[in-house]
Image 1 (tube, rainbow, N blue to C red):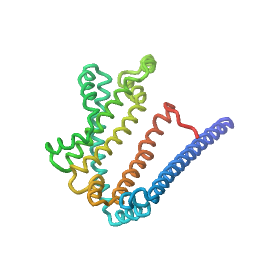
Image 2: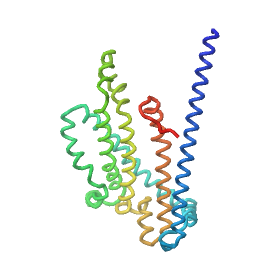
Image 3: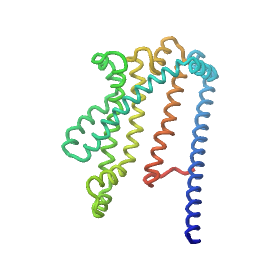
Image 4: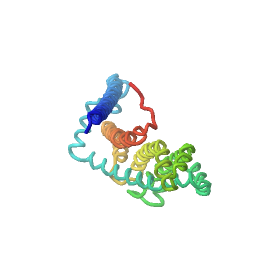
Length: 283
């Protein structure tokens, strides 16, 4: 091995190591910023709670909310409710991805499919999923099936619409360039169209997951039997247990934060940021 080769390898190793350290610093800064924002929000809430503007039963102090949360985690009730809700969210969300992603691609690739489904998407997407809960209860009863179907309904349309928009927005120059280099239809689809549409697809995943949580909480308030974070909030409201309601909201927010950072954030870093398809904010 020549000295030039050794120096080149060493330089490449330093570059990779430096990039990894930069990524770690960015990740730490992002976590610190998130922590600061959450602390500020908590301080604002605590200030209003201590001001006496609301009765303590309506806006309890954070110490009571934290105590309630720890108690419910320790006896396992909050964990059980969270597991039931996560099961419903993930089941309906995955069904939405399995249906919405292929349909969105087909809509963008075939005019006949687009002509059939686009009016349906345009008409059904604005209908709030919560408005369909009573109707689904009449059709499917009370329990998991109704709740999962509500989540599926809420999450499918943003997944389908964003995928359709992403595939249609792929730069035609990329397709012509790949075709000129001998890429067949299969290679064009997997190596050009899907990567080119990935920013929209990931946005669709985020929006679908968000709407899944909104739908599941609303559905659990009415259609779930005895388990789920939505049911906890609704039941606590009946007995004016505001601390329990806020504890459940903290759990929902925590789960959403973890999914955003560990799932969608990691997916975005390993795809569109790695390929240079998005700009990362500085600072």
